Image (cartoon, rainbow, N blue to C red):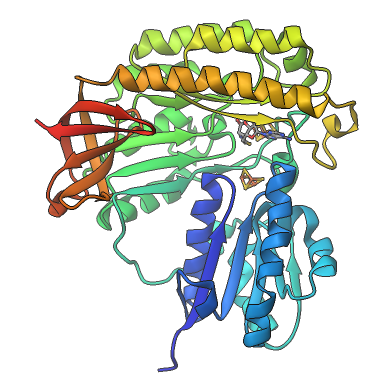
Length: 439
Ligand code: SAH
Ligand code: SF4
Ligand code: F3S
């Protein structure tokens, strides 16, 4: 047998890209590739890219530049760009960076084996279609390796919301939900390979409406069906839009024990004026009412969010509304970003907020969010939690796992406990994690 070719994949952006990178590695596995952790050893390098903010997209070009010496040392090395920058800038990447051999978008990577064969014959290949066929039905599958205790599973892709700042509707295309039976089969397969926790993924995961028994299923119904899979202990989902948070999904947070008490629910701004300009189609008040209903269903629900500061037209008063909303919600965790104008989006045409003003607001928001995160973590000290052990810790005899609330937890426990769930008591809150002991 010929020696396996080596594939190095570097992943940027959201969890969906992490999932896609795994699928791409599997697909190229059928062309004789095994993955490597070292770019220097690779026969093919794939960058799975993100276009969400300017910085993310620019990183791709600087990273590609760094591969020049590798290609000089090994002319047979093939370099590919996948993901959302590939989708947005396909032909331009080819023009700007002659060492790129292939460009493949997020909806066409099932065609990678054929593209790989073409580039081996000296071609340069670009495929950024939005094809009729579902890539997941056409993905070549490799051998079923065992895997760690947690996994992502994409159930929905694309977005029809068109927030004025966001590239996702353009890079990922229209909202599509995968059929229930495929998801169930994939979930059972993951569990058979050692997975205990599945995070259902979608750009708008709670808008899920896949076909199942009796027609359209909601995300809540899918979660309840997954909860019946023996061996699957924990279910999470991300990312949700406030307007798609239906009653049955709120209820599931209260009565489905396998659904973890952590919810990422981006709001972006606390100012109704800015929310309107963002085309978010909800108000600060409707978001707060929704949080109340979620907390009524599950009082200990830990909330996470995304915020954009310095959106075109944001005044100091608008920003103060965001700070007030954050104080009202009290987030356990959150991400905040300075607005970045993205080509092709409606907001890109508007006048921007001065950079130093936006930077100052970002710092103020982040210090409030950090304070809330610390307070949430400190509040865990002394509490009993359950932890799913994922991997060895930095110290000998120590494991790292995640609590129900998605906090990283360090615990003294034997290595054979990886993949097990233990009851622990939290002893200490450190910067970004908790320490605990098995009860
Ligand atoms: N589908 C998810 C978000 C995907 S993008 C949702 O609707 O919530 C992840 C986050 O990046 C967004 O929630 C937003 O806070 C941020 N983001 C998106 N576009 C941005 C831009 N142009 N500038 C700055 N941040 C942006
Ligand atoms: Fe982007 Fe808005 Fe769609 Fe989220 S809901 S992916 S922020 S357009
Ligand atoms: Fe980035 Fe594309 Fe995800 S733009 S955030 S990788 S959907």
